[in-house]
Amino acid sequence: MVHRSLAPSRFSARSRARSRARSRAHLRARPGARQRARSSLLWGSILLIAASGCGGAATGEAAWPDGARQWYERADASYRHGDIEDAAEASEQALRALPDEPKVRLLAAHVALARLELDRAVQLTQGMNDSEARGVRARAHWYAGRVEQAAAELDALLADPSVRDPWAQGVAKLARRGRGRRPFEIGGGLVAALDMPRIGNTTLLVPVEVNGEPSLAMIATDTAETVVDTSAGGEGGWVSLRFAERIEVSDVPAIGKDLSGLSRQLNAPIKLLIGVQLLRQLHATVDFAAGQFVVRSFEPPPPPQATTVHPGYVRGGAMVLPASFSAESEGARASLLVHTTMAYPVALDEGGWEKAGVDVNGFSALPGQSGVKMGRLPMLRLGAFEIPNVPGILGAPIHEVEKSLGVELDGFAGSGLVATFRVTFADGGRTVWLEDLPPEVLEQEANARARQAEERAAARAEAEAAAAAEAAEAAGADRPSPTTAPAAQPAQATGDGR
Image (cartoon, rainbow, N blue to C red; front, side, top):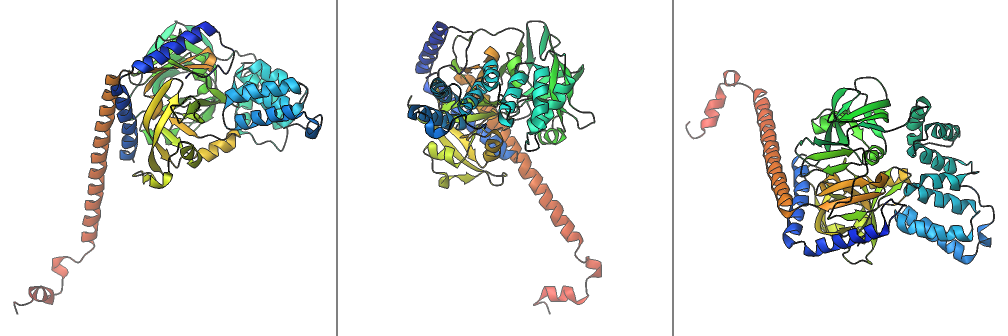
């Protein structure tokens, strides 16, 4: 099943219908070998990681018509559970009944922002100057590329001493220095295809020039903005990126952050994080199995065989996929934050596992990962794709992300899951196409991950053995040597030889 669009798209309804029909036909014809291969590949990810070690109402709510209140409450509940599609439908119904009610308008503005209907988010909050409305308006202006308007709203927002918004603080500095700039100006060729380096797991790495310097970037969908490394000094700012000497993206706003810890963890010199905002601008395709990252200066055509997914972007930047833990079309909906910094296929909180019908009491500890347990998700449905037997974990910091976003998620979808598809961003990120990989490719990747897991496990065992030998040798050095032992000791050692 392909969900209805979350935002106006340039693709016609007839094209969408044809795409859905192709997706369903493709899935029905998919052999069992593909599912078995994908399952092996996803479990390989787990093994490999383990081996690695609001404004006041104009009128009282009591005076609201019953129907309006019910629509509002439904919209609010759906939004806070990441179901942006249902929140959009319910908030529109509430707006029809109460078009001038500030609480209804503000909720509808949050939904519009998540659907990347940026002009509508601004229009719905006009005349509302509380901090929540300013936050929505600032983000809408920023993601629409209106730097001056964003700077003005952010300055007004941060002038409120009760506001603590790390995103606003970081972006406000960029917006103040970016007056007159046109973010994400793309020039040069039409397409740039880059080989993605491998470092032994599903980390999504991309070679890129940053201000003319060859660098290594990581795709990090858990961050909205581009992030540039400041471990060697400097600070964030407006940078220029070049891909494969063919496409240049100028005036890219980048927040500064020390990435040296991430570089040590990956054993790779990460100088840039490609966040959700940049991915949407690049019309990008990520094909980990083929080792290819594609950047385009034009809108990509729909693939011949793909399922269409319409993500929501909570607060304009947090990419949330609509999903289900059931093969049934009416199964319980789920919301997964795309978190490619995490290498596990999926991570669910206790509520997510319960929604999936899985008892976490039977989970086993994941070796080398403190407080993390491993389980199995019987079914995950993304668009028209049904993915059985997905390995996942319990213990990821999902609550921290929920608190920062003000929504309740079921969990994360990590790079271990993303890597099993060919993923293309279209319509400014409002549409994402997922293409299934051939079963032989999935099998090949699964075998490769299994080999890497074995090699890492062997290396880890060897290192532990070497450390134990060193410790034993050091302990031996602390004992008295034979030349200083008491003379009577050898006689005592012989016992019955007296």
